[in-house]
Amino acid sequence: MLRFLVHYGIHFIVPILVALFFFKEHRLKVALILLAGIVLDVDHLLASPIFDADRCSINFHPLHTYWAIGMYCLMLFWKTTRIWGIAFLIHMVADLADCLFIRNNL
Image (cartoon, helix red, strand yellow):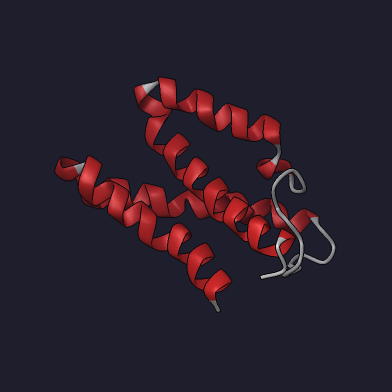
């Protein structure tokens, strides 16, 4: 249950908090973009099975590779891509937390 709360809390609560605290003037628009970062999970459709509760997504799915994460970090440097970069990195943090739960059998 804790794993579920942490993983989905990062996916859904953290983006809203980031928008509220750091993007006050455009908080609704930014919150929606940050929440849309979950679209990265579209690459799960390439896996068989599509969902495996005991699989670490980091460096398994194409949009979850270290190379992709590097690209998301680069997105932070340009204003036009910054919010999407933050969205994708929040997504990676959520999935990393899940991987830590899996690795530690929690």
